Image 1 (cartoon, rainbow, N blue to C red):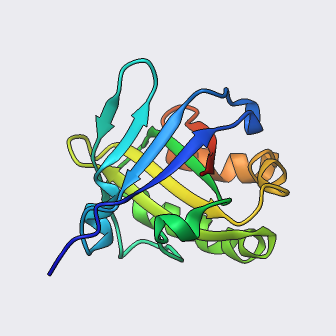
Image 2 (image 1 turned 180 degrees about the vertical axis):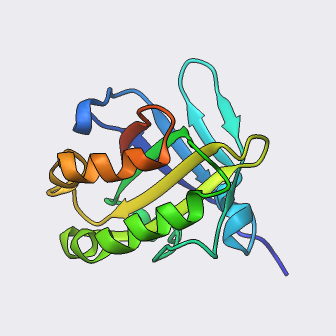
Length: 164
């Protein structure tokens, strides 16, 4: 069976205090989602390739669409070091499941949790939004921030990208 080797490509935005000029490429090099996300490529002056495992047993919704369907979508990427990788799933699932109805109502169509292949204490969350109207409202909410901080050893990095 052939593999889809296309990529979702997105440019960084200034939402949530971000800087323009970054490029995010998410490879879709295999059928199952865990392999798709393992080809995350973030380009700055020097390309950095990092590999992550998708966790289908963690709370999630939606999926990475075909690149043509992702156009004009927004990706919110949250990265950070976990406080306790062994207990993260339970904490993540409670927080993500509680927030999902409001986030979906505002336009979040996909939530996918990952951990690092080489270092399982590295966490990556990808959320695909169909608009940018409520991204800052959601992720700038101090109550939401306080809940998500329960996962991390220090403040995670949040970046917003616009699919192209």
